Each structure stands twice: as structure tokens, then as C-alpha cells.
Length: 481
Image (tube, rainbow, N blue to C red):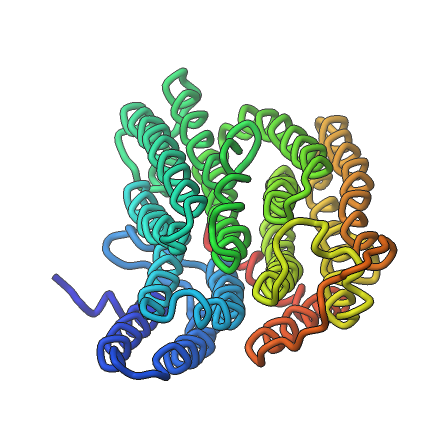
């Protein structure tokens, strides 16, 4: 075996080294009172260092095409690593308060999940893809159950495992159909040989359904809100942005590359799913009073917007999708960081806990407002630019059938107004609703302040710094798809 092929997997190799270093540090610091702080700093530093190989990695393949990477995949790895860094930073206070004896396991599971996402995005073979997906899903289930003394956390983990198991089974069933129809599971070979037959159509639909469970697309979104509500708040943030980004890019690449010849069959299916996802997510979010359930349905709606980019079926689609995920990481992690801060300082995750927050914690209320406005797509925040690029990508390249893409974008625009209404419910609670005993003034820890600072910079600058979009666009246009 030629072990030099591992040199083509620099991002994965360096992340694996980081995993080993955190594991050894956890073992060495088992009796140290500063164990949590040291592990948090070490993990954060290693993730920041990980940005370098992700950013500089060249297109490569290894092991006969099982592993294939491209510039756009490396860009997404950079985005997800940044999101994971924010999760590690914001989780330090929660770990200090709730899980000091098993802090090492938390960081090991987070890095393991990220490694699985790396492998999933860089797969060139359906079994390698499935292996990466399970490498990400199993540690994520452990993270969901991390609050082991809380019944809701155990319930959320059980529902997550059941959903993951069912979706994996459906996906493998679809992959078996595709293999039976084509005789190969390599992406390039399948793209060259695939033909329109009932077996390939069924395989494609089952595969899409299985991955739809992972992304929480409607009608595959069951138990998403229960999982978000029961998981620890930092884990909920991680689940909502990092895993969603990896799964959406992988699905987009497979649809556009492997099933490119069947675009006239999967595109109408995608139109229906996108309209249902955005509409159901927004309407259900209006009914929520618990903020993590609220953000769960918001996340379902955002998944529809992310997948809207794929409708364009072009390099601009991958650019818009990746840029949307980058902006979404900044805005959504800001919201979950504020939720975590409030929860750790005597509040709870009910919307009523934010009544009058501006009176006692004006800076926190302002940052929450900026993040919510970005999620809603209000200018001049980055979320407006991300939605604009997604809409432009969706309507491009459909000269032969222009009606449906424009109709889907129209539905998305109407739902943007609906989303603004329910995001403003939180703003109303913080600034307008009267509360005799609002949450008392509190001071955040340094870690949470750093996390909020990074997210706020992203919300304000990602949209107006054109070099970021140009960097992503250059990677997408040179992607070896």
C-alpha cells in the first residue's frame, strides 16, 4: 500500500493529528484543576491552525479515486472549521458549569465529527461518502446526549439516533439501486454511465430522501425541533450550522455531478421540497415560545434557502451555497451564543426570559438583534447579500423553462417577509415588552465575548467585503466536478 497518498489528504491528516493531541492532553491533565481551560485553549488553537491547510490545500485525489477534493470543498472545510472554532469558544463557560469531569470527551467528539464531515465532502465513492457521514453522525449523537443528567438530552439523543438510523437505511437502499443499475459506486464512473431507468430514478429518490433527513428538509424534518430543544445549547448551535453546511454542499455536488444527466427529473422534486421546507419552517416558527425550538424551525427554513442555490445547477450555485453557509454560520452562532449566555446567567430558553433584556443587558440585546436581522435578510447585513446571491443563482441557466424557478424564488421572497415577522418577535420582547423583573445585569466571560465579537464581525463585513465572495467564486469555477 502506498502510504504517501495520505499526503494528498493534508486537511484530514492535520485534523487527525489535532484529535490525537487533544486526546493525549486530556489523558495527561486528568487530575488538573485547569483541565477544561487548557483543553479549550488547545482545541481552539489547533482549529485556528487547521484553517491554514484547509485554505492552502490543492485539488487532489487518493486511493484510486475514493478520496477526491477540489477548491470549493476546501473552502467549505475552512468555513466549517471556523464555525467549529466558534462552538469551542462559546462552550467553555457551559463546560465549566456543567461538565468539568468530561470536558476532554466533548472536544474529542467535536473534532471527530468535523473529521467525518471532511471525509464526507471529499468522497469520490458512495461508500466513502457513507463512511464519512456515519463518522460525523455517531459522535454527534454523543454530543446531543452530553447533558447525561437531563431527561430531555437523553430523549433528544434517542430521537436523533432513530432518525439517523432510518435515514441511513433509506440512503443505503437507494445506493444499492444505483449500484445495481450502473455497476459502480464511483462518482465519476456513475456520472458517465448513468441512464434514465426506473432503477436509477428510485435510487436517486431514496438517496435524496436519506440525505434530506440529515439536512432537515420537509417532509424529512420530524424530531428536528425535539433534538434541538433537548441538546445542550452549544451542541444545538453546532448541529444547526456545521453539519448542515457539510451535508448541503455534498448533496449539491452529487446532484449536479453524479445525477447531472437526470437534472430534468430531480430539479422539479427539488422545487417542491424547497417550497415546502421554507414555508413549513417559517409557519411553524411563528408558533414557538421556546427559543431552541424556534431556531430549529428557523434552521429548517434556512435549509430551504441554502438548497435554493442548487436549482441553478451551475458554478454560481456552489458559490452562492458556500457563501450562504458562511454568513449563516456567523449569524446563527451569534444567536446561540446569546442564548447560551442568557441560559447560564439565570435565564432559560423561553422567549419570555428575553422580555426587557435591553434594560439590563443592552449590548447583548443589540448583538442578538443584528444576528436576527441578518438571518431575516435585512440590509445592510450579510444575510441580505447571501439571500440575493442565492436568488440570482436559482433563476440563472433556465432559458428553456423560466417559469418554475421564478415562482420558487417568489415563494422564497414571500417567506422572507414571514421570517422577518417572527424574528421581530424576539426583538419586540427585548426592546418593547414591559417586564417588572427582567433578567438582571450580568457580565459575560471572555470566551463568550470573543465568540460574539467574531460573529458580529462576520455579520457586518462578510456582505461588504467583496474579496470573500470573489475567493469563493474563484474556487467554485475551478472546482474539479
